[in-house]
Length: 305
Image 1 (cartoon, rainbow, N blue to C red):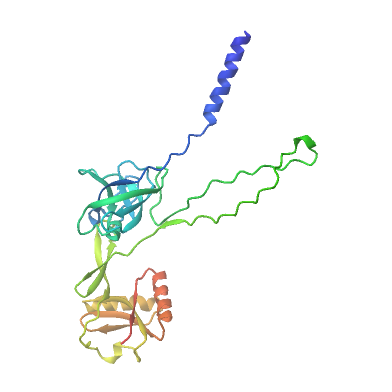
Image 2: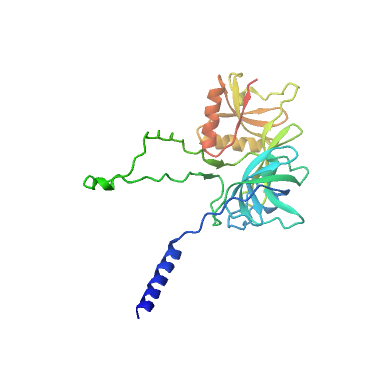
């Protein structure tokens, strides 16, 4: 009877030890080398493999096996340009391609024109594989907590006091907390002739549209409208909120700014430009632009005429 009781007790102890022992964390894979491609507006608004809505203007990527949420650095082997992305999708499944970058990430390392290219991929932090919120995502890689030895109690016997080696070693310096890894939105801008446009996801989330954000100045003198549409004084810096080929669109934006308490005016040469100012210093113009951006309106600062 006693051997049987001993065997049952041994089985219980072993089972409890196995149940409470956590598996060791997986080590990051070695750096990878392969072919990268990219995907953009044709997939905008669709659901990625981890449940997010794909936005080609976020720094994300698709990989066949890396866990969702994994942070990797992708470096163009030819130009040595690098970008940090987060894995939120599966693929690519074409030929020998290793990783699929979003439009914004591919633009960062010069892969838009060629379409594909050789890259080196280094894992910064492995994800947990669960569905994670869309970028901007802040990931902090923390060090393992220090092991603290409890101090002996006052009534403990002298024989139980911990052994102290002499000389006492100097305490290790306190290391600063690691800087968080931040993946944020980027503005992908392209210049067509003298107009600079920015790609923006449409309201229904199904495609990208080109939104004009700035005009490259021409050498010819602008033709001004009657003075009733211009401020009393010029010079310094102005904040340009939009540029339109149709005057009605410019007036619509001017009315919207008026409802926000902004005194906007319209300048015109080849386009109708909606502007604020002028401001004596660039800092004053920057404060006006920040006020607009707080209301979800993009703007640029240009030198006044």
